[in-house]
Image (cartoon, rainbow, N blue to C red; front, side, top):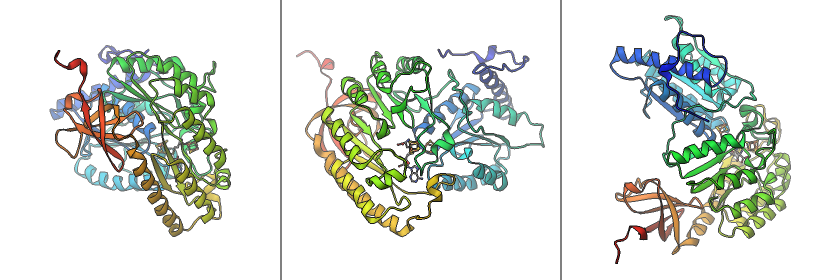
Length: 494
Ligand code: SAH
Ligand code: SF4
Ligand code: F3S
C-alpha cells in the first residue's frame, strides 16, 4: 500500500538501496537536494514541463512522471520555457514521430538561451533504436533518454545527469528492451482531481500486423487485482469519482497472473468500491470480448454505457492479413449481442484506411459496417508504415492519393452518422459528471454523460467533479446543450 514517504528522513550518506521503490525514493531525495541548491542560486524553484504525445497509457505515465518531479520539488508549468522539459513520446503513426522532431528544433533554440536547461525524452518512440540514433546524432543537446519500461527511474536518471562533473555533460541513455517488473507504490500527480486512469496491465501480445505497440511496450503483464483495488480505493479517498481502467487489450487481463482472474471478475470487484461512481475502460479487442464481460457490464451499475470496440477494417480478408482474428460477420454479431444486453450503449471505434492490399471492395465493406453499426464516433487513421512490423514489408502498399480519397469518404460517412446518432437522447434527463468551465461560453459548464457524450449547460465552477442531473435540450452535431435539474435535497422546504 502506498504511503507518503518523508524524503527528508532518508539518509543521503548511505548507499542507494538496491530494491524498488525504496531506491527511487532515495533518488527523489537526492534530486530534492539539487532542487534546493538551484533555489539557493536562483531564488526560485526550478520549473518542469511535461508534454504528452499519444494515448491514455502515456497520459497516465506522465502523471507518474510528474508525481516523481513534484516529490523532488520541481514547480510544474505548461510552458516549454522551463528548467526541465520532458517529452513523453508516441510512435504509433509516423506523424507522431515527426511532431517530436519538430518540437526538438524549437527546444534547441530555447536551450541556446538557457544552457542549464535539462531536456529529457521518454515513451514509445525512444524504444526504437533508429529514433534514438537520430537524436544522438542530430539533437545532441538532449540530456536524458529513457523508454517505456523504466519510467519509474526518472529521479535516478536526473541524478546521473546532474551529477556529471561540469564540462562533461554526457547524454544519459537508458532504454530497456523488456521487463517483467511492475514497480508499485510510486507517487503520482493527477491532471484531474475527480477522475483518473488506472493501469490494469501493460504491453500487448496481439501483434496486429500494422502495429508497433507490442514492440515498444513489450509483452502483456497484468497488475495484481489487490494492487489495482487498493489504488482505486486510495483515489476515491482523494476525491476521484470516475476511473478509466487502462490496457492495450483489457479483455485479456489477468491471464498471466499466478491466480488468474478475468477482466469481468475484476470489473465486478471494482464496481463494489464504495464512493466510486463511474468506471470506464480502454481498449477492448473484439476477439476477446466474452459473454461474461457483457454480463458484467450489464450488471455493474457503475460501468459506463460506452464501449470502444476497434474495428480497423470491415473486410474479413483484410482483417485476416491484419492478424485481428475476427471476421466482419463475427464483429457484427458481437455488436448485436452487446446492444441486446445494453440497448442504450454508445459504441465508438478505430478504423485504418489504406492498409496494404486494401481494394475498393474491401473499403466498401468497411463503409458497410460503419453504416450498419452506426457508431457514436470513430477515430479514422490513414495507414502508416511502421518499420519492423509485418505490414511494412508487404509489397502491395496503397498509393497515398487513393488512401486519402477513401479516408475523406469514410470521414464524411462517420461524421454524418455520428451527428444523427447524437440526437437520440434529446429531451431526456441524464447524469453528467461536470469536468470544467465551457471554453466558449461564459457561465456554462462542460460535462460528460455515462455514454461519454459531451454536454454544455449553464452552471458555476463549484460543480466541477460533481455528478448532476441535466436535461438534454438540444443536440448540436456531436454534443448537447442542456439545462440543470436542481438538486432536490438542496431546495428550501416548500
Ligand atoms: N490497443 C488498442 C490500440 C492502440 S493504437 C487496440 O487494439 O484497439 C490506437 C489505434 O491506432 C489502433 O486502434 C489503430 O486503429 C491505430 N493504428 C495503430 N497502428 C497504426 C498504423 N500503423 N497506421 C495507422 N493507424 C494505426
Ligand atoms: Fe496494436 Fe493490436 Fe495490440 Fe492494439 S491489440 S496495441 S492494435 S497490436
Ligand atoms: Fe502511442 Fe505508445 Fe500509446 S505508441 S498510442 S503512446 S502505447
